[in-house]
Length: 579
Image 1 (cartoon, rainbow, N blue to C red):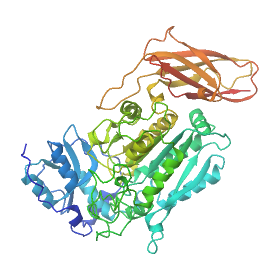
Image 2 (image 1 turned 120 degrees about the horizontal axis):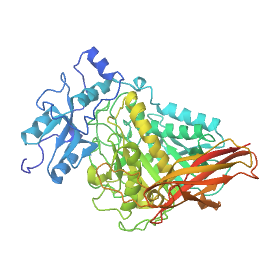
Image 3 (image 1 turned 180 degrees about the horizontal axis):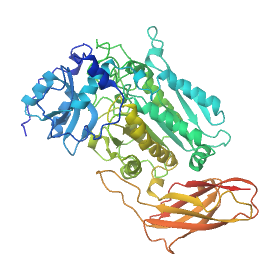
Image 4 (image 1 turned 30 degrees about the horizontal axis):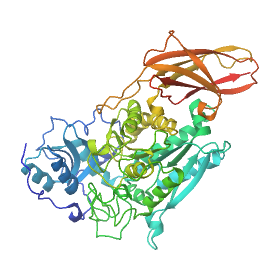
């Protein structure tokens, strides 16, 4: 399409004009743009509209434009990442990346022969957001409201919730200035059941302007707690596993974003002279997701203090990064060798998910390299399980976006061997409440449940079949009654949405236990194939259960299946009430 030229004749992000975005639209247009409403019928981000007149002005005087920027080579992509405000949304197969550019940059890019399509709808939203406060997004809680909710949950569920403080924000560490915040989270588990339990670490808000992550993380914990004792899976998970959930891991930055600014980073103001109030292209702070102490300082990060991808003065220089790293190291063992090619063992434990916006994508390590991580196959298997539920593309960060160094998922996997993922959710940073409630939330709550289930053996159990439609023929029953337990074992529930196909196997056997999962030492009973033989990837199974001699009470029945490759899947529960 065009030859490779020298560097783009564009102003570096660090030297962009330090003016707040202005809007020349009428007040009525701004109000209409800001109003909450249904999500767009089509995803204009991931599917550029060929009908858009790419030479057309994008709105009345908008200074910044959200565009789909097309490229032919990785060298072009690397230039864009280095010199433009490239967003964490791209389509490597279609050969475009989303970026926010000025009109001068748009002209320069087109003069070089690059195809640049303006996303009219997202450009209007981008500029309107600069006068929007979080009060217009009633579905999202502020930092203070998030912390208040966590304390309320601890008071309501004292045997299930502990609020923990893992460190301080930059403003709190720095003397003078803003008071800053503690970095608070919750450990959610049945405290009355002792022992070392598998752990799922869920974090949101590392990038301040990405509204959906913190709310999704907190809603997931709330759903589990409200369902304890009512939903069988929530019950056995909280009895036997631990959820470590940290919705707001960048509270200083989030408070800036809550004023309607597209602030990405923390509030470290020790370097440079950046724009204040924040703009998309220029503001104070360190990109915490480029600051981790694994592969720090390489591609996809910036040394310019006002850039969106500014990595900080040194590896793990920021207190927020230190808090996350130290806490992860305290709850997960080091399960991987020192070499990049050293795999974590198949029996490694723990899952880590960092929630971001926007995509929609499930990203696996590595971000720093296009090389396969040593546990790539197992990481992809669990990722494709996620993709089955939320419909997101499942791919390696470096392969479907661009190189990035110093990221959370690379640190957690690279240092500790934990199965780690970045989720890019939704279609906007300030996702409308209509879209969040109708799409992001219901699409990802089952994903987080699947991640929690996989926390004991994330490199093994996702390969095994899922037990679905688990049911008993009657409940409640009188002691002595014989009930029939039924389930479907399914080894096919995977989807990468275009990034590879998961191998599947036939079902080999099914079993159930009462009260606790099989790996705790609970006795198991075999189930029989409904059609006479286990010889397909999806099979029904059943078994009679004689309740003679059972005391009155509620019993938790857990069903699990094994495939022909020997992989046992995670269990699924059903309650049986005996009178």
